[in-house]
Structure formats: C-alpha cells, structure tokens
Length: 115
Length: 115
DNA sequence: CAGAATCCTCATAGATACTG
DNA sequence: CAGTATCTATGAGGATTCTG
Image (cartoon, rainbow over all chains, first blue to last red; front, side):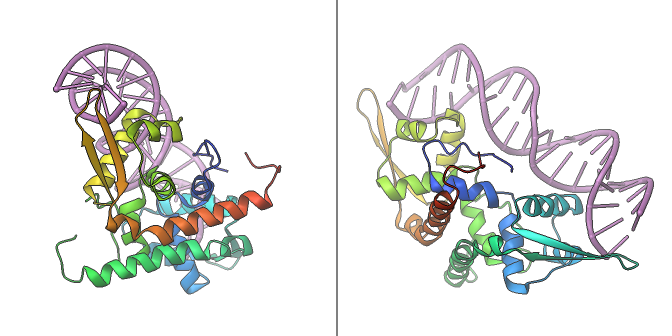
C-alpha cells in the first residue's frame, strides 16, 4: 500500500492513517457508510469540488487497500458500484467519531464566524 | 483557518478534517493525549522522519486553530511546552478511535506481510 | 458512464543555514 | 533550544482529451 508514514515507534495512529489519510478518503468512506452503495457519478455529486481524476485515484487506492470493492456491470453504458468490504467496515468507529465531532461542531458554531 | 475542504453539503467529516487533516497533526495530537506536555524537541524525537520545518508548521497550525497552546519559558536556552487546549481535548474520541483501530490492526498483523 | 493517459502548474516538504 | 528564512525538487492535483 501507500506507505506514507514511518510508524517510528509503533504509533497506532500512523497505522490507521496509512489507510485513510488520502485527502478525500475518509469523506468517501463516510458517504459509503451512509449510502452503502455508490456509483462513480454519485461520488462526483457528493464531492463537486473534487476533480474526476482525484476521485478515481482515491477510489483506486481504497480498492487496492481492500477497504472497498467495486462491481462492474458490463451494460451499455457501463455501470459500476462501490461498496465497503468487511475490512473497510472495521473503520466504522473511526469515521463515526469524525462525523460526530463534526456534527457537534456544527451545532455550536451555528451561524457563527467560521467559514 | 486552513479551509481546505469545501463541505459541499454539510458533510460533518469534512468539518473535522479541516482541523486534523494535516499530514502529521493527528499523530501529534495522539502523543499529546498520551504525554500531556511535550516540548519541541520531544516532537522531533517522536517523529524522527519528519523535518523540523514540518513539525514547526504543523504545530503552528494546530495552535492557530486553537487545538493546542504553547508556553514559552524565557530561560537560556529557551524552553517551550505544548499542551492541548480544552477545545483540542474534544478531539479525544476521534484520536482514540484512530489509535484503537491501529492497535487492533497491529495485533492481527503481527509478524505478517505488511511493511 | 466510468475511467485512463497526458500535460502542466503550483504548493508542499526537505535540506541547509541563520537567529534570539 | 526553538524556531525562521531561503532555495529547490518532487509530486499532488486540475484541465483536457481519449476509449471501452
């Protein structure tokens, strides 16, 4: 896999980051935890500010790392579906914690200075 | 703050990432959750593969985002201490979830192919 | 529709040297 | 000790084009 982090002296957080540190990976995983099945075009809609190229790259990495799997339906035009693998589902607590923090922040910051 | 993510349609995960997505931020936070107080040189020891410049930058961002605060002791030579703010501590569940995932992975992968 | 391939640009991160 | 300044290179990532 990617191997960005050195895991100096066994920092467990670095191990986790090896899998989800891609700029958009955790966001994509989050959407997959919510919707269960997403097509390539769905990701484009969910992440309008992200280029096609980036989405494809992140999906490919997630697939290579076995967090997600894709199914190709050889129709015309082609249709593909992405879903979490069992391994990918083990990240649920991590993504949930991130989502919950964000929800809490949104509550507090309602209509405030940020952004 | 940084404002890397667009938060297209209120994805809470993106909100969280605004704060901890820096390449080494979550690792640094993890160490601070463990040790409570760290000096600049401590971070260098914890992250031997990361350049001084990077550590300084990430610390500065975390400080700007109010996740950590630094105390300068104007001795000779100077000494500084970093610790989590109350706001920074609210990330505990996120960092903990990441750490726990990494610990679980290490158990399963003991002496295996990875790395 | 779902990508891969190409090109090009700007930001990130390393190395090194300097400072209070 | 704890940084900042500068200089450079690597590569991330956008725009565009092409294909099954």
